[in-house]
Amino acid sequence: MDLMESLDWYKVEQLSWPADWSAIFGREGPLLMEIGFGSGLFLVDMARRNPKANIIGLEIALPSIRNAAEKVARGGLTNVRLFQASAESTLQALCVPDSVAGVVINFPDPWPKKNHRDRRLIDDEFLCLLASRMFAGARLEIATDHVDYAGQITAVLQRSPHFESDLDVAFTRVDEGRVQTKYQQVALAEGRVPYFYKWRRNEVPAEDHFPIPKELPMPHVIIRLPADTSEIGRYFRPAVVEQESTYIRFVEAFQSFHDGKLLIETYINEGPILQRIGLEIRARATGEIVIGLAEIGFPRPTRGVHLAIAALVQWLRREFPSLVVVQSNLQGEYADIPHKRD
Image (cartoon, rainbow, N blue to C red; front, side, top):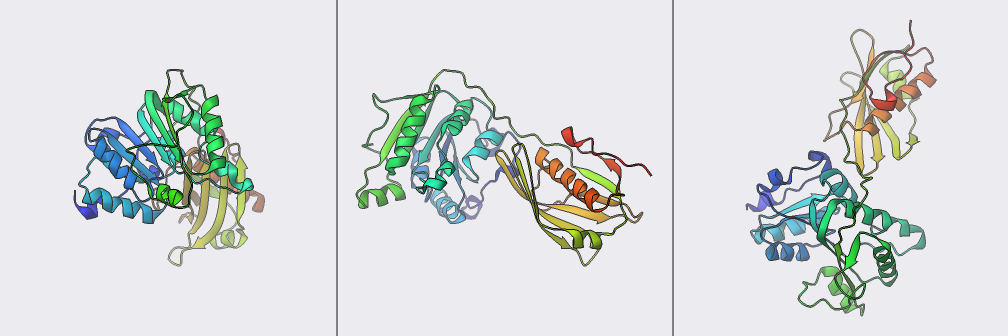
């Protein structure tokens, strides 16, 4: 594997939902996952120990991804793929039910402040997501050096109907032969003995209430109103829209010197998928205005994007009551934007 080629990594929004793992790896194999691989020491060791497995590593921090990618390349490991992605988005969007053979979570962020504890990864909801994606017999390994987080992990594992310990106890404080991660080395140097969990997915069926996200048609709405894009831009103010499980924030409006079109910087959080995209407001030669999704980066036309465009139209209607919707292809509950007739 060429070193520079190995420095590539994947993002959830760049792949099909669900992912075609055999195409990504160029072969069939059991799918193993390390969530939060840090410097990549454990990930590389796991790849060497499991040469027939397809192994994906998840991280958010780019320096960690680059560091791990170099280790993977130097080791000549062709069975590893790196992702800059969250565990939730990868599991829900890319993995079909009963497809994951094993998951390792090494020293997840303990979020020690009391008002931050809801940010911890391992809770009842996350175990339900794991259970829906892991097949019976798949292994779940967790390590932490944080006492309070260990208490939480123990509690949620013990009350989960979908996981059973491979040991006679919930955790062990010794794991011989295990490669030491950077965080484990720091913990030991500071006198903290980690907790190691070795559990397994049992055969109790898991209800799958984590649907794989769907893409809708590329959205657009055509309107007529007594204003041009420059006037629309002057009216714009940052705003937040929340509906059910979708959070939308309109951040800022930018106007092109070339053709006057507006780009609305928009952040959309809908379940496992987070997108920072551009929504485009542009004028036609006929005087009509088109609102759609700008093709910047890798935008995916999800339900949340349709909702965001519907929210823009509703905002414009409040500012310009005489607005006329000429055409709309918005889907689902947003398909019925009221059309005003001349």
